[in-house]
Length: 193
Image (cartoon, rainbow, N blue to C red; front, top):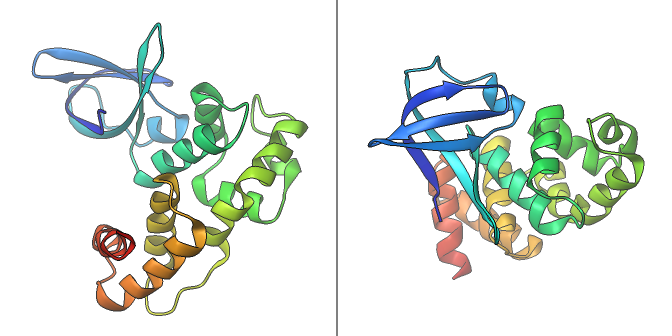
């Protein structure tokens, strides 16, 4: 799997970019939320990716933050009827924190305002992700920064760990590790294995 690309930003369009890496140009589809944060064409870039392999194509999807990529993976892996293009539309239409809040509060109206997401799809998103995103958005850990805990919990959920196990490991890890999300995640993974 291609986890990230690091190279030169060759082309920039609102929904896709081309990253030149050692003479090879990789086409990467991105959400509008990542487009807004891109450096100008010709600049160096490191972009997190998700590789979608199908019978007829290998497609790269790119994100500038781990939280966006984790939410993208949660959507395509845990919500029936949502593929990569719809997941990009969700990320383009709503910030990750707003999305989590909407899911926790069962705010179907907010989710339905995203282009391409109807009422039934919004209801399915809430139903299938409330227990996964709900823990990240609703829980208040002691002794650690909320944003780091949320990012780490979403990462563990996207790796397939159960919410209760991930939460317990993160609470324990937050007592041992600093406030860095990567250190917190590494420590939690050690506890889970």
